[in-house]
Length: 399
Image (cartoon, rainbow, N blue to C red):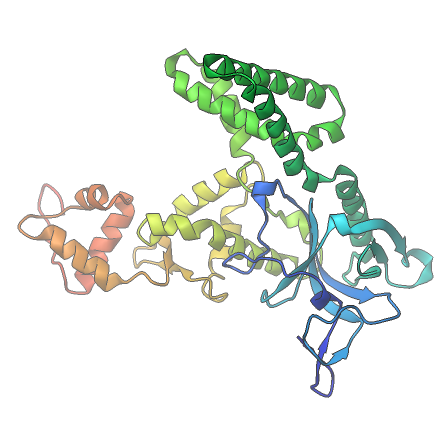
């Protein structure tokens, strides 16, 4: 809820939109199951309503304010999303609710560049761009939003389901082995038609068929893996490379940030993306991962849009400040790790003490038993020694 200058509650255009889901780190949750992909992100945007009457009140009470300032917009293939600066809320306008786009302001008019989004339900909404490259930001947003409206990617899943229903209806007319053979023949026929139509057309045709192509590639990779030795290794490696490049639906680059606060903002959002990526992996890894392992895993998921070690270090140092349930930790030896806030050195020391009962324990044995890198195993043993749970016996054989 907004507040007026005198402290009274109010509602504004953004509150009249549906709420969007957020990831655990506070970023917009992209619906990858529906083929949604992030296209553009811009900060410092003002949202205005051009309607003569207030937009529908979402039951918040108070007075009407016709604008929201200092928003972050995220444009995807399916939605235009708005979020506030503290990552506490997000709202979206689905592309199916937009029927026209136009631009105004900028150039020699000395007015701020605006993108007019004409909707079916809420009238005209104005996006006013305020950052340094505001004219370019407006034009980039206009171009990408118009392409998204033309492609209608949100209809892809419905189209895929319709094709599947048609194939099932044809196959259901037969029984037994004949039904299986008919279904396989239809699947191969559809795949052949899809590849011909996608790769023989222009780039727009390829993008429209992208979701189906990815599914076919995934099925083909599974088949190659089952074939084992009989599969062509070169072909399989090419397909694996293609799939690894599709590892993340949204992998931002520094070029997406063009204002004077670009580095700080880039590293802050990168830290949030990193937290979303690492949360399930840290649980499997026991709560701690070395920064080297994080760098390799994260860049592999990003595909070709890699980040530098310096960017990873800068983003990792913000994890604790942003309260993302993990933080960067440096051991006395200089080894850096990302560690869950719930990780407890004392509990790990007690676990190592149990493993050490009745026999000496080396870092290699800890590495095998706990399934962690030997470098991290050594640091955990040293930490347990500092806490007084273990003592060290240095011999000619090992430590």
